[in-house]
Length: 167
Image 1 (spheres, rainbow, N blue to C red):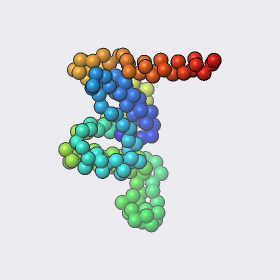
Image 2: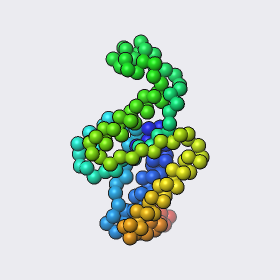
Image 3: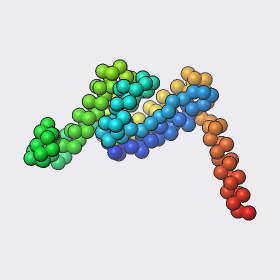
Image 4: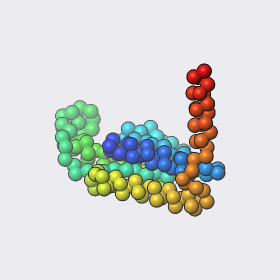
C-alpha cells in the first residue's frame, strides 16, 4: 500500500515478483496493490472486518511537512478544521499512520517501510529487500522462485494463435 504515487510502480513490481515467484505447487498468496489514502477507505473495511488472511505492507517516503498549506477557510468550509495549515505531505503521513495503527489494533500483521528520501539508492535497497525476501520464502516452501512453468502454457498458446492468424 504505497502512500506516495511515486511508489505505485514499485508496488506493482512487488506484486508481480511475489505472484510469479511464489505461486507454484499450490503455494502463494494473492498480492494486491491498494493505493494509500485512495483505496484505504474502501478496502479497510475488508481488511479489518473480513478474513484475517493478509499481510499488509505500507510504503512511504518520509514527509518533511513542507509544501503548500491547506487554506483555513477552505478546511472550515469542508468541515475539516484539522486540515487547516497542513500540507498534503502531512495529510498523507497521518493517513498512513492511521491505517498502520488501525490494522495493528485489529490484530492484522502490518509492516511499514519509510524511505528517508526517494532516490536510486533507496529504491534499489527496497527492491533488493523484496528480492531476497522472496527467495528466502521460496526456499522455505521448497519451490524454485526462478521458474514460471504455468506462464509458459499461455505463451505457447499465444504463439500458436498468432501463427494461425497468418494463414
